[in-house]
Length: 371
Ligand SMILES: *Cc1c(COP(=O)(O)O)cnc(C)c1O
Image (cartoon, rainbow, N blue to C red; front, side):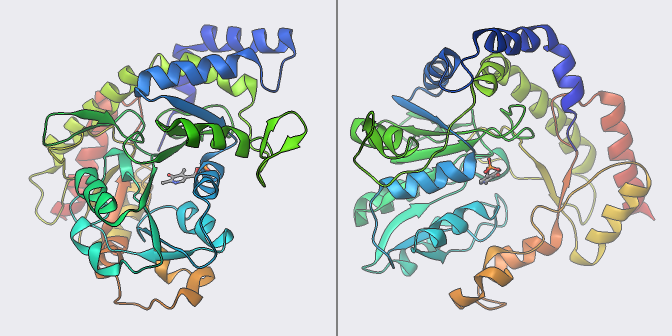
């Protein structure tokens, strides 16, 4: 699915040098590289504050903590994503309220949002799934109208650009009150372990987030908030500085692979290639096709037999997960997400895909649909 080794070989000298410099400095925690990485990422994202932290799940948790919500307050999010979003909402004693997604983009359907809002609704947490922004203009409009916070889970779309109807462009993760991301190795900007970050343009929130990831401490050994310990290691920051310089070229490589897939697969009857929306660039964290539910698993095993990894992101929507049964949802409540879970299949997508590999993969998919 991903080829991190070949990617590393292209930047080995820079990465090895960066790691060695951290070792020589022995500033393993809060070293200079962390501050530099935060500055460089802030400039890339065109955002005022970047606060590095331990991982993408921590980033979401700290973002929710910063909003000072009360137990039982409701946060609206999507059921078609990784578990982190509803996990942290629940851990903080808040209530996740799930709204279905659009079948074409896999992202929150803004037309369904207003009907779930109650007087306890405090925030909306859209996820920019698979590399493409949710409909932020509509979501921000609704949030402003109802005075709600917006937290963007940008673990999968770092570097994507959203275009507002007035022509304004913003990076994914910088449109709401707080954005979060993950540097898990397989993410578009991945380190060599765990890592994450928070984004905000709000000075007060920035200061609070910085304190929260550091035990709620502003001045040494004086605690203003109940916080957590969530840090990005200096070694990871040093690696990320090297990889940030490659991020745009990594995206071009992913988009090139996606174009190849599109042109080779879009004519297949019964197969739907991922939609590309006109309001967001697509950085293709995943290339996710839809096929009839009764052939999805057989296509997956057919490809596996041919040596092609393919993955189902995600097999079960969050509202039907055992651990979250007490939220009271049942099968049929969020039909688009439920349907997608049966039809989606993500093909190999990374920065090192060669034409002959792409040709082999798409030839095999075509063979499957011919037989
Ligand atoms: C990867 C991911 C996370 C979690 O990031 P970690 O660094 O693994 O904690 C959260 N949300 C989404 C959408 C993700 O893809």
